[in-house]
Length: 404
Ligand code: ADP
Image 1 (cartoon, rainbow, N blue to C red):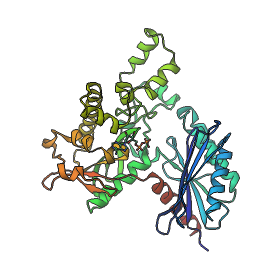
Image 2 (cartoon, rainbow, N blue to C red; image 1 turned 60 degrees about the vertical axis):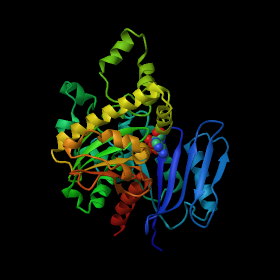
Image 3 (cartoon, rainbow, N blue to C red; image 1 turned 180 degrees about the vertical axis):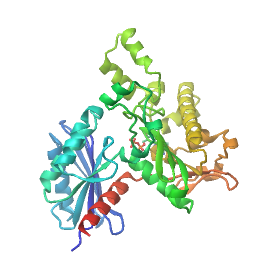
Image 4 (cartoon, helix red, strand yellow; image 1 turned 45 degrees about the vertical axis):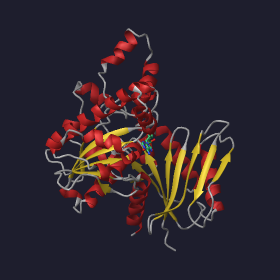
């Protein structure tokens, strides 16, 4: 029997998201999520997508990722999709930080694990959880190929002019300070899909991708290769996000420390968790913000304006970086669903060949689609992202190649 299934694992500090896919037709066999790992109230939500099974929930304390993954394995086994199945070809792991070394998905061995560990100082919140997820999966199926798919990989093609900060070179190099970029799996997938939507080869198309979820980033993609992206050493840089400031004069941090008496850790939490939309108006869900604006709430309206102003600046900047733009693609929770954000982001940019058709923009759909009017020089697209499918595809391509 040929093994055609791939399990995709996205391990966060206290959560694990997973999907089991059959790569013959890219169909999902099961999806799920474990939350609050390490707490008394851990919860596993499992949805089988074959055989008409109903979603199931388990609430029980799960002390660590190993317990959580064992519980996931039990749920999959109950649907006849156990991890011991010979049909499982590989496990694909989302790994947030791959530094400069990992430019491609990589089969994990001891040397690869060491390198992911070496990157913990530049990704202290993310890589440790990813490492735990990998170790646990290895313990469950030591014989199975485990593949790391890095969030940073797509951005490793950025030229030095975009990747380097204008920081003293010696200090920057000593501490590996440079712009790495994140959400790379999504930017890669969406830029490719956008070219497909235009009926053109990715090599011939220049795209600005706007990944607007709770975390948000923009990228400039020339002929299928990333040439600039808005997140930097960490995901803090760039656009206004759900809870992050995005771009801000770094001296604000010195000011808050020296004059405001705040500690570095307090400022870290402030700028990453308590700022952005939530810091500006108390809400980070775009649906709620739009509801408040419709009800006349000025605080929410200003937060929205600040969000859009930053987005516009990046569209303009990446237009200039690319020189010629064929398409702008909106993706992720806000980009896929919030028509007012898309409309406001390109409003007034007709001189750049950009416009949105009101009727097309208000259509709700899960499909990739164009929302620009026929006459517009630049296509504006909504392209639902699918990071899990991209991870599964890359994982399967790698292990199939090895076995070929
Ligand atoms: P992440 O993966 O970064 O957590 P998502 O890409 O799932 O985020 O995006 C989540 C965000 O998408 C929510 O915080 C909300 O602001 C926005 N969102 C989701 N659905 C809608 C909708 N129907 N209309 C407007 N915004 C939405």
